[in-house]
Length: 409
Image (cartoon, rainbow, N blue to C red; front, side):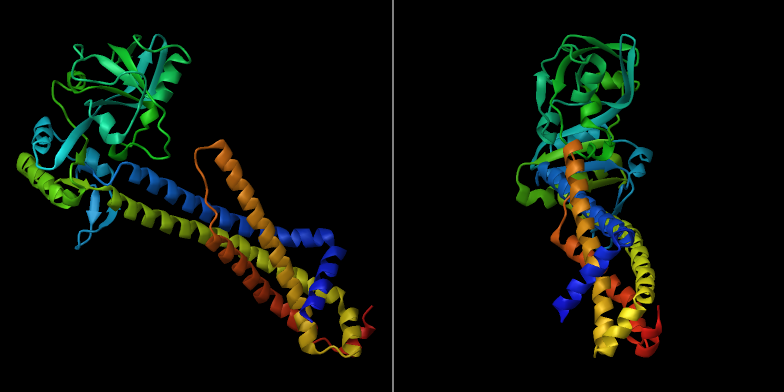
């Protein structure tokens, strides 16, 4: 019986191709939107997780200000990134004290020195010029593509290392080594260019793009700040990961001693990971809920079309009842027809979402992830809407009086 009704539904849909397509459109757009948004959210969570884990489980970050909001149990609830820029910055004394702590293998600081770099008549704005130390490469895992990085053997403090994108913007394909760039009207000699950093993330608390940044020595940065170092971030690597929590306690106590207050935040990658996954999960859910409205609209469209279909096929209903079809059989016939429409719409929507994902992957560094759960949820929701919005027209068809139906032209 089901197979026969299914075949009848297909024949009915083929008989009105344009109307069927227009009916499918709402479901297609709805399912495509839902699956696409979920895949974007899952892809973002996957890439963010991979990049945070790439820092290593021996990584610790400290920022001025209470930028991390914790609950009573000490679990991260949310972030207030503006707090980093409104609190008193870290000092060289703070950094020196941390470097002396037990189990701290290496530590470095970042100081924002400028936001633009110029060469000849070309000027690039909206970037970060960061004062840092040679250990930055070790801590953040950045590689040098050409030349070298800042090191303690450099006699001249006024040297600069360029991110890969910034180098291209300033010099195109030309060799940048040995060339002069201007930072705050001061000449700096380019001594290195970093490898391209494949990331959809920014550089931690400072929020800058590694590929579009310039790196200078701490001493050079201090010349732009009245001879004082003001760090907006400390990045730290520990020797023994098993003792990372106790090391964080020591870092906290050290900063309390040197700063005299607790206006700072300390975190490790797994805390970022948990919180970011929670935030992205909530965001994906909210956007998906909004996109689901499209499926709802598509369901209403199906109900309207099914009412029209029932009206047009009144005589058919009368003939079927006259030869013995029951009300349940008539109802099932039209209900299956509504479900078939939603099933086709869901399949096409999932397919289009997969195509969108492939296009985004090919054109960007971001890879959406279509999960089986998202496909099942979207498809099940579509079938559910088919049942919900198809049941009323199906019941109306089943209740048609056979004699009156046969009189219908």
